[in-house]
Image (cartoon, rainbow, N blue to C red; front, side):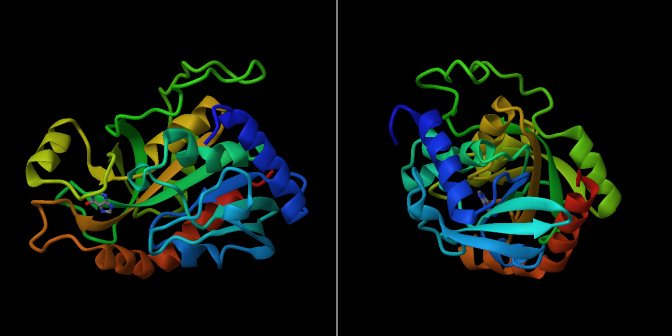
Length: 275
Ligand code: HPA
């Protein structure tokens, strides 16, 4: 990615407007591993755009992610659904990882829903548990606010992250689905799953979820003043807590099983936040 990450996001925002024919989008929904099918059921499709055809987006490379940006009309809102995301472990810089969120903001979005598949550290949570992210530990060693400073028409880099995950949206979500848990998400660089010793360290640090995405996007979204909801699906118990070795197929299967609840929750949130 170029040094002008913000300029590129502005270009992508314009490209989203012209490719979808939708002047302003309201909500961005970023889908994690295995979440893609849920998106097909939240509303009426207005346009499909190949993500990698837009400025700054590389082709996604992980099974279960799709190279699709979909504009959906749902509950009076224009929703930009990102079928895939870029990860640090693919070798992308932080600026590429957060490019979707910055482009969504440039396309008008004021809210972002970040979903992911995560390992669970809380022994009380079964596989398939849906968890609202209450706060995060950015253990990735990267931060999207490094590099050249944001342009003058945007806030400065030292953004406040006190309420990084919107208390208002979390309260709405609890009202829609009484079975949601809340927890702190530890975002790691990834590339491999963790060792049991690493998982014990993360638990001692207060983490209840571990995953390889979301934390950088949440920071970039808050910097731009977006309201952020983070939603993890526990697809496996974290290393050392699970009897069997971790497998990517199980992650995808657990996500498929939670689909109906996820659709209901996201639809409910869109209805509750409609203007
Ligand atoms: N660790 C890291 N990332 C993950 C996991 C995990 O156990 N499960 C799904 N994504």
